[in-house]
Length: 507
Image (cartoon, rainbow, N blue to C red):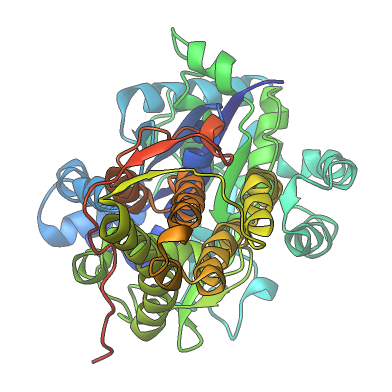
């Protein structure tokens, strides 16, 4: 078994105004990366910023600074936000990095020299904010189908990539590799709506702005976004550089995680570029849905968002992470509201998890001064709980392997719900009244603590700060994946209980 795992998010437009929708993709990617590391994989997790283009050039001009000064000033905002969310990326790529620009130039030259890029003239409709060209028939009410903004006609000399050359090969690949595009609905959309009606050659250079990677053999042209941005997934690993050790180790990527609005670029343009470069295709592209507010996409243009750090400061990082991972069935759109974040936090984190941990440890201190071992005096309810715990790694692995992150979390919380029911069934407060039942009481508390410990091993991938706090209260270092099954002979010297999540009042 190859135990390497390469996961990427899209590289984001550098912005001072990231919203919770941007965080959604990255939180999911981080949970997957953490889970893979936990289960023994050598993980490489890539994210970054896409910093070239006319939009950046215009914004820099308006701000009275150079484009490089403009992106340098705000790109740290993304890194700060990812740090606030506990994102454990292995590399942060900027398309203004020297090594990336040099590799892009080599890639462009290679494609030109082998005849996959040619010079022509582009006349058509262009959306500056989306950096996308559209045909008349693709517009919606005369506007950009992605963002709904005005488009304008452009005419300029450009280089084109022979995307049409790879149409039949793309269809054959997508139909023979049904797992490549997920979920299934996105694959059907790409084949039937975009590829089979006919692919047009792709504009891959511009002359109407200068903020980009210059074409080495024709410097009035700059490399347009597709070859510049999409190739980050291989240039970050050292492709077309003097040291491609990471590329040799991690490529092809196991998973490109993208929003549904850019699936087309990642499943048509990117595979065609890789085919032209004679590079293996990634294993899977997963196009997830959007977090929406009141039926509309969260957007800088509409202003229907807060800075995510406001939610983190108010409710805690793990509450934000948990909501993003648990609330939305992965692949579908999901509604975000502060009220739903509070309700989810209260129900799952404060009640099911936090209250369980607190009262279990409190009872352990009250009845046994915090020292708990398994006296192995069984109750009729033990077996069902222990069996559920021992099957947990299997069911979570099955869900995670199919990218059903919300379902994987629910399996962990099913164990926690079962623990709460186990308390009601065994009534430890009644057992404590009978001196002859003290060994049974300690067994009950042991079963609860050991079950909480096993669940917390897996929670490290999703709400890591909370998992660390639980391990600290349990005073245990048994927190690796191999320890995530029920052990009969642990001894716990518990620390004092602390509240993990206080209930939040809806204002």
